[in-house]
Picture 1 (spheres, one colour):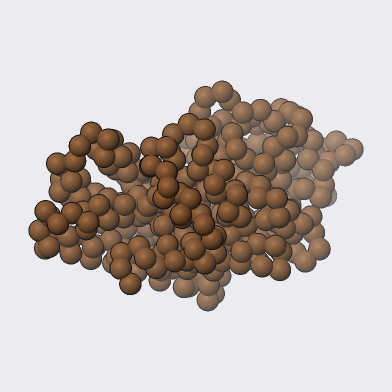
Picture 2 (tube, helix red, strand yellow):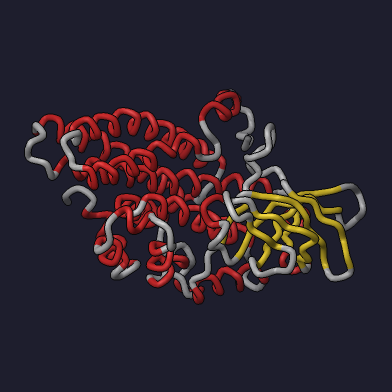
Length: 365
């Protein structure tokens, strides 16, 4: 298949008409104010991409999802990055759901109504791990009252559901434990800052059925969510690789660029995608465990290095473009470069990965 053809065919199979709808608009129209891209994303049924078909979703595999994110990143990279957070949130909910609990009903509800879920990270606090609770809760007769601040990244203003890590008193009174709170965005006490992506919860009541405690999962909540971060690395890698692929695609279409340059960029981009697909196949075969998370990190960092070579070279080769096209190129460069700043960045994980290779535990930091 030709460049990006497989990825766009996957979108056409799972989300008919989405790629065509995106292609009709310019990059800057899709990425500008007004959430045009998000509306098209919702209308296509894409919020249910990772939800099983028997729960009213699209039943995508990890390989499918990776290809969708790359295709989406080539059309609207900011949209791809934002919706990768949603897909990770759905993967996290899948980890926490059982056949008959409220979480499984929420998953089905998201797919049926095309809602967007956001995951509240804690990485904005110096020294805090990504999964470190950024909120606290106090017990009340109707559940717990949660207060605190989080930054769910690009979906703060568009989310319908917030998934947040909180610290709660243990049911047996023996100290505290970590829990995941599922907070509908319209809940009383939830507010979103006018600028930035800060979400504040002020004494928000979370009923017991929307609170998943570590003790509910035999103490393995952190392990399960950490494994789910393999999904995050995969989806973000595909999204940012998509932005770089849009630049490569422009080069491939330009006959003025020497064949050797075109094929060189093609080989680098496709090699990066092949490595990411290897991780996706592992998730599909074995689930997102600790080993898969490690591999997803190795591949992500390798792709980052590839993009650091491919993107500047593509820009150099496209240097003759006129102003409107040049603006698009600048936007794509910014989006492609963003992979290095995503959670679990290489500098903070170096010691952890070295310890893991020496038979230590892979700790999310």
